[in-house]
Length: 318
Image (cartoon, rainbow, N blue to C red; front, side):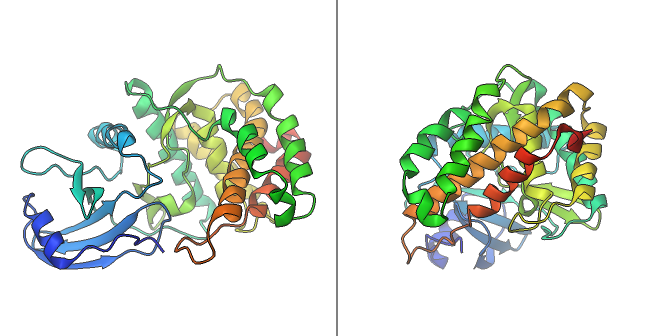
């Protein structure tokens, strides 16, 4: 569930009065997502998303996210930029939280995309990276490779409480990844979280790339590795779908380009992506109160991905 902050009808009406978007017709909380409070807002002129940024999204990072979305939208990418009020302000305050009114994008996020849809999503990521080549702002990846070992150590013995041997498995993954990580590759602003639920589809076409609140500056190919690990497996990480993985790479090649040398780097990057999500899910698993509104995600789904990539040869990406 993702409505942590309640917004009254009176407060929302006053908030919308800052904009040229007509009068409030209805508002409904949106259950999807885990980071922010989101409402679907209908007015007399159209439909919008209201987002209130909760504690896990730092207010100081919001100008970077808003500038990134404005940059992509100006280049024709299907992203949801924030709407400026009559004074030209994007980032507001509502119910004690930073808040933005965001353009609504039509489409559905898919639980089981087809290879054709995966190819379209990979192509959209490639186009996004091409459009970001001249984006001037930077934001460090606070969940990048430098954060993995400290987070592993903070999780400590609790890892084996999640699953016996988990600490040993992740230690082996870190030992097989960190010493070989090449941080000197092509870098740009990346999405860093382009799971299937952050891509909106209309049929076989991408109608929206959403939820950029992990966006940062990092290795461009790492973004593709995050996508490959998120899209190419079933939800619990037990079954790999090569047709989906191959379609993502074909799409990315068509949208940006993908050399043989870059393909050779993807296995290690996918191991890193799996470690990142296994560790952050493990941390949340160990530290989220039982009565919290956030549904904990199983870290083992990404541990299984890590073990798959560790055991698989480079020909997976040939």
